[in-house]
Image (cartoon, one colour):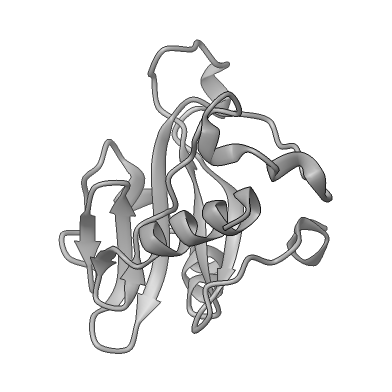
Length: 148
């Protein structure tokens, strides 16, 4: 099995782990020095700014409604509770654009809260989307498709 095939097999294995209902956990991110990433830079690579906050997923499930989740599990399902995860639940439920878009795509990003880096106060308590996935095959949209 080639390194590329190994990487994609590991990615599919992690994607298969349930987060809530039919929404899977966000993929594991490895350091480039890890053997799992060998061959990863052989094709086109998209580099995005790393934001050091808390991983957040915003999604929609026909059975459960809106899902707002950290990396480890749901923080709000079906709009309940209406607050939590250091303000992320209230923020997401209060932004109709996010809620509307999450019915079309799974949104993955960072909830910017005080962590190990200092950011300007006005940047804090916001959801920064860095990955957008299709429902069904969970493939990723190219940033050109969702960044204006």
